[in-house]
Length: 316
Image (cartoon, rainbow, N blue to C red; front, side):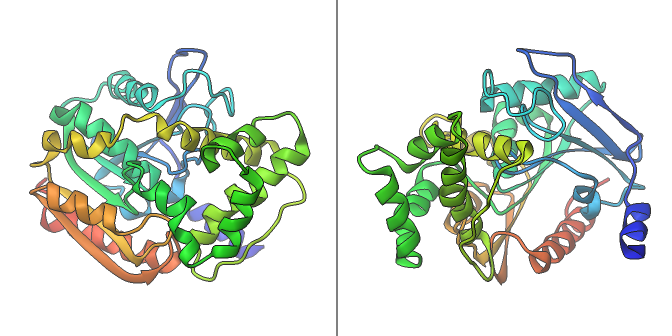
């Protein structure tokens, strides 16, 4: 109890928060931390379907940086929760530019993203390279089909019983994401649970250090919305064109970038970060000697690498 109170007391408080003006029926939530006059950092969450929180500021010196976070459409505190209409990568990039303008930002910003957040930041940098000072990315996900092929088929090398069960469920459906997106979007709570306890949970299995296949007895509204967004995006190839990021990587080839990735990330294999590093001339790839997509050990490793990179590689 006292530990929780102490942790809550120590959490950074936003100096500004609110919503962007409504667009396409969506109100995007944002919150700002640190120094209002500091160097701006634009940060978003993973998923798709996650949320931002004050803990994401931990890698930055809040006396020096202005950390601006936002919840993507339908996610976190953005409204309406779980809404999928007008919810694509292009919509997210437009929201980011609207946020940039709404807050009166000038010049270049630092972009920070992990996992799906790295995908978003790479797409933003390719669309607006003139606004990008550097990229701070971890658990890189390119949404190019390679990871999906691994997730839906090749990961059976390590978890054959899980993949077999999902494929047995899906039967003749073209792809697993399409099948489970249909279940999670139905009105039948049993089908929603089946999707969450199969496809949704398997993503956690691959990302864990000590994986176990669990089941949920029910889904609250927040969990249902998160899973629905995740599976719908996966079923639509993350609303990106084929190999979009790597086809456009020349636009950001000279932008400084830090890429941090666990050696044995079973959720987003290291190959994506390695290929991106080879294509980005001013990038630095740091491989953590660990297991899993996200854990406390990796979090500490990422924090140290980002702080060192900002101090040694990025000028004030």
